[in-house]
Amino acid sequence: MNSYTLTTVSRFSFALLALLASNSSDAESLKIQSPSQNESVSYNCSQSTCSAWIDRHSDRLFFFKNLPINAVTARWISSDIAQVSFSCGSPCSVSFFYKESKGISKDIHDILAISIPNECALIPTDDGIATIYLFDKNQDRTLWHARYNDRKFDFNTQSATPFSTIKAKFNADNTLELNYQNSNNSLISRKIKNPCIIK
Image (tube, rainbow, N blue to C red; front, side, top):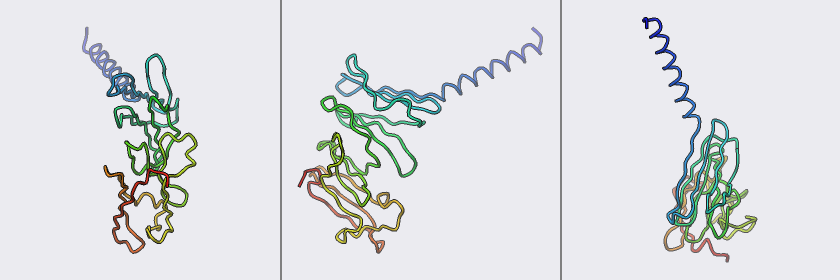
């Protein structure tokens, strides 16, 4: 074999390896077994679409199929609740949840905090922030609600997306902790008692 043939073969081999590497990086798949080992959450993304689902026993339950997105995150947030999320552009995000006894939730947008024991999330609304149940079929029922124009909170509404300036977390004592800048740009910390219980 002469040097020209060796060079040609080497170039072809390099091109083939590069093509294989680029094709493998275009697709991403992940399967995460539940802590109980009875079911798993999986997703598969091509260059332009993603699908995500739950495998349990002989069933496959889809969160979504061939959605025009290119990245997904999936995890078990408790021993029996899975979360699948994707970005729809900063600060927008979409999440779905699964629990065997409750099935797959509706899509929930822009979650600010999650209370796993109460199966409750803090989300933005058209006029403020509110808590909802993760598995509420209609998501038209808020448990707790604070409006951006509520003087008691004095949220800073100068941002186009005021919720993006609010940091929140649920505590073990069933309080919701909010940290945000008010209209005077002072840092405010406030706790809400039992925001996941219908008043």
